[in-house]
Length: 109
Image (tube, rainbow, N blue to C red):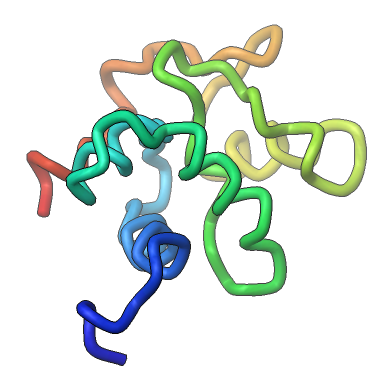
Protein backbone atom coordinates (compact mmCIF):
# COMPACT_ATOMS: atom_id res chain seq x y z
CA UNK A 1 0.00 0.00 0.00
CA UNK A 2 1.37 3.42 -0.90
CA UNK A 3 2.02 5.74 2.09
CA UNK A 4 -0.30 8.44 0.74
CA UNK A 5 -3.21 5.98 0.79
CA UNK A 6 -2.71 4.96 4.42
CA UNK A 7 -4.97 6.38 7.09
CA UNK A 8 -3.48 7.81 10.30
CA UNK A 9 -3.79 4.57 12.29
CA UNK A 10 -2.10 2.60 9.49
CA UNK A 11 0.75 5.13 9.44
CA UNK A 12 1.11 4.73 13.22
CA UNK A 13 1.28 0.95 12.80
CA UNK A 14 3.96 1.24 10.12
CA UNK A 15 6.14 3.37 12.43
CA UNK A 16 5.53 1.11 15.44
CA UNK A 17 6.63 -1.92 13.42
CA UNK A 18 10.03 -0.24 13.00
CA UNK A 19 10.72 0.11 16.74
CA UNK A 20 13.73 -2.14 17.34
CA UNK A 21 13.63 -5.09 19.74
CA UNK A 22 14.65 -3.91 23.22
CA UNK A 23 13.72 -0.27 22.57
CA UNK A 24 10.65 1.88 23.25
CA UNK A 25 9.20 5.11 21.96
CA UNK A 26 6.39 7.40 23.05
CA UNK A 27 2.97 8.17 21.65
CA UNK A 28 4.09 11.77 21.16
CA UNK A 29 7.26 10.81 19.30
CA UNK A 30 5.25 8.82 16.77
CA UNK A 31 2.74 11.65 16.40
CA UNK A 32 5.55 14.17 15.91
CA UNK A 33 7.24 11.96 13.31
CA UNK A 34 3.97 11.75 11.38
CA UNK A 35 3.61 15.54 11.38
CA UNK A 36 0.74 15.48 13.87
CA UNK A 37 2.56 16.88 16.90
CA UNK A 38 -0.56 17.29 19.04
CA UNK A 39 -2.00 13.85 18.28
CA UNK A 40 -0.30 11.67 20.90
CA UNK A 41 -3.70 10.59 22.20
CA UNK A 42 -4.71 9.45 18.70
CA UNK A 43 -1.53 7.35 18.57
CA UNK A 44 -2.70 5.80 21.84
CA UNK A 45 -6.08 5.01 20.30
CA UNK A 46 -4.27 3.42 17.36
CA UNK A 47 -2.17 1.27 19.69
CA UNK A 48 -5.33 0.17 21.49
CA UNK A 49 -6.76 -0.94 18.16
CA UNK A 50 -3.59 -2.66 16.98
CA UNK A 51 -4.12 -6.06 18.60
CA UNK A 52 -4.01 -8.79 15.99
CA UNK A 53 -2.18 -6.58 13.49
CA UNK A 54 1.38 -7.76 14.32
CA UNK A 55 2.22 -4.36 15.86
CA UNK A 56 4.60 -4.27 18.86
CA UNK A 57 2.29 -1.97 20.84
CA UNK A 58 4.06 -2.91 24.07
CA UNK A 59 7.03 -0.80 22.89
CA UNK A 60 4.98 2.42 22.93
CA UNK A 61 4.77 4.19 26.29
CA UNK A 62 4.09 7.69 27.53
CA UNK A 63 6.78 10.39 27.47
CA UNK A 64 7.85 9.59 31.03
CA UNK A 65 8.23 5.88 30.31
CA UNK A 66 5.04 4.87 32.09
CA UNK A 67 3.12 1.83 30.86
CA UNK A 68 -0.09 3.80 30.48
CA UNK A 69 -1.50 1.35 27.91
CA UNK A 70 -0.98 -1.78 29.99
CA UNK A 71 -4.67 -2.24 30.80
CA UNK A 72 -5.30 -2.85 27.08
CA UNK A 73 -3.21 -6.04 27.13
CA UNK A 74 -4.57 -9.45 28.12
CA UNK A 75 -3.46 -10.56 31.55
CA UNK A 76 -2.35 -8.49 34.48
CA UNK A 77 1.22 -7.66 33.46
CA UNK A 78 1.53 -8.76 29.83
CA UNK A 79 2.90 -5.42 28.60
CA UNK A 80 5.56 -5.43 31.32
CA UNK A 81 6.41 -9.08 30.67
CA UNK A 82 6.85 -8.44 26.95
CA UNK A 83 9.16 -5.51 27.65
CA UNK A 84 11.16 -7.45 30.23
CA UNK A 85 11.55 -10.34 27.76
CA UNK A 86 13.36 -7.81 25.56
CA UNK A 87 15.70 -6.80 28.38
CA UNK A 88 13.89 -3.61 29.42
CA UNK A 89 13.72 -3.05 33.17
CA UNK A 90 10.29 -1.99 34.47
CA UNK A 91 9.70 -1.03 38.10
CA UNK A 92 6.26 0.07 39.31
CA UNK A 93 4.95 0.43 35.74
CA UNK A 94 7.83 2.69 34.70
CA UNK A 95 10.71 1.93 32.37
CA UNK A 96 14.08 2.38 34.03
CA UNK A 97 16.92 4.11 32.18
CA UNK A 98 14.44 5.42 29.60
CA UNK A 99 17.13 7.53 27.92
CA UNK A 100 19.13 4.36 27.12
CA UNK A 101 16.26 2.42 25.53
CA UNK A 102 14.33 5.33 23.97
CA UNK A 103 13.95 5.29 20.19
CA UNK A 104 12.93 8.52 18.49
CA UNK A 105 11.65 7.91 14.95
CA UNK A 106 12.38 11.53 13.98
CA UNK A 107 16.08 10.92 14.67
CA UNK A 108 16.34 7.25 13.74
CA UNK A 109 14.40 7.13 10.46
